[in-house]
Image 1: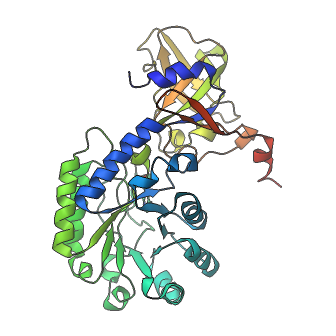
Image 2: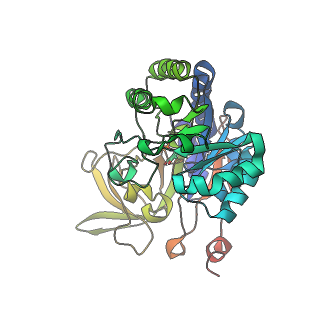
Image 3: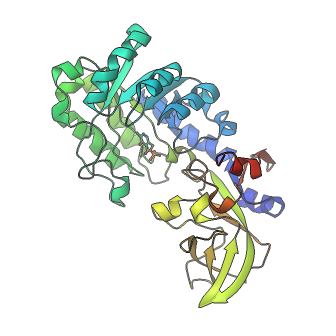
Length: 385
Ligand SMILES: Cc1ncc(COP(=O)(O)O)c(C=O)c1O
């Protein structure tokens, strides 16, 4: 039974709570480590997708470090994960760049303007150890589910055009960065590598490393790991470069839960239930992507005998998680367990309406439930004054 541990623990869990499944995180890490070992690539965790330092102990030994979206993630990676820190930020100020350099081993720029302005500072600070990267937009749209998540969508602000990789620019960098995927399967990772080979071949002779970003869905059960490994080995050999991968969401794919409680049930056009977990505040991607999270034991609207519209405990009319059906009527006080709730959830949550932040907890392989952090009024108020 894949979810038996959380189902046994749920009755005693104080909600709301994000619960990391440490055994599943370890299983995901084994996949990442296998790719790293057999393909000889550098493998980083993108902390933008998942950053719960209590879980880093289960991840650190399998990976080479973290990749950050800016100063605070760089610092978090350096202080709590350790190993290498790579930082890519769409735009730095001189002050944030200097601070990033304290925590980062690799700095990536998004434009030639930023590169030309700041590469001398990186070189002055780091000397021969300066690892300077530039993001290139390969102009290859492989993300088909939403333009919101396609870095190659028309007019994208991410990365320079390949034509901007002139000799003077290439002389300033030693790494190319291409992030172009989002939950893509192996054939797209392979396509991306082939596209880079084909369109950036000359530039590849001038760099030592190619960071192929995140979005490689390596822990998905249908992901063809062998195809990826074969393509990575061939690419590195052909271009004599080290490939860096920096997946985020997939590292914690299906590796945890958001546990909530039914607070109220009533009827207006249909049966409705208010929960102490909210789409707006605790799982914003449900509204932003958008997508429908799975609840253990539930079905689609009308699939099982009792259907409810599930909503959050906020003022926002659109704070609706969706219509779910159940075998038996919901009851006030009943726990509902949302699955696959580690990625882009706790890193994006907020305290809109003063809604309490969920506890952070670990569910260990032996069934032990460990609360790592609880939040209260101070966490809500601190950012307001
Ligand atoms: C530059 C960069 N690297 C890595 C990632 C991680 O991607 P994912 O969580 O889809 O694997 C992202 C996600 O937006 C990104 O922008």
